[in-house]
Amino acid sequence: MDALGLLCAVAGVLAALAWGVPWLWESAGGVERREQAGLPGGGSRSLVVIAHPDDEAMFFAPTVLGLGRLRHRVSLLCFSAGNYYNQGEIRKKELLQSCGVLGIPPSNVMIIDNRNFPDDPAVQWDTELVASVLLRHVEMNDINLVVTFDAGGVSGHRNHIALNMAVRALHSKGKLPEGCSVLTLESVNVLRKYLGFLDLPCSLLRPQDVLLVLTREEVAQAKRAMTCHGSQLLWFRRLYLLFSRYVRINTLHFL
Image: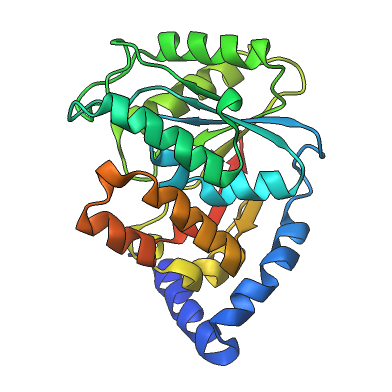
């Protein structure tokens, strides 16, 4: 771990001791207002692009709820049914339930169930094919903002990283429609990943374009969304819900 990471961890503990964790919750709205100057305005059409059912709750809940609070019309594009353990049909239903909890109606959810995009950490999805499908969806739905994983994929999963590669290819070649921005979710080291709200001081100290922090009630909402994925709630994911920053805080960067 680098020195700044250690400093952030210490700062998080000191912040909690000095002000109490409720200060972090109560300050969330103020932090968000200061940090969102670069986002499109209310009424914008935002598309969250994920690889598997449960990514929306495990990683992007602060983004989905934060954009909803800013009056964005949020939709979701999922590139697989999550069929690694032959549970694809179950996981599709779980995703729709989770999205409902997060405020995304079924009509705004698209699940791609295609053998070209298997749920498999050992398979590298074809960048051009992913980019083609994504671009078609963006154009058909007049999307203003695309949100997906960064180059680290948060967990390092190849399917997550493939989405970043595709959106970067579209962005670098100027293929996205005029006025369509791209935000990527920042990957952090393991210590920061499991600091929960205590990572907020570190998130404030490090460069980022957008910072979204949930209130206490919204964290409970994000956790309810994850519990919709009953097929995935193994013991280590329950621990993840207790400690992960991604159920509470999202830091994002524009391409």
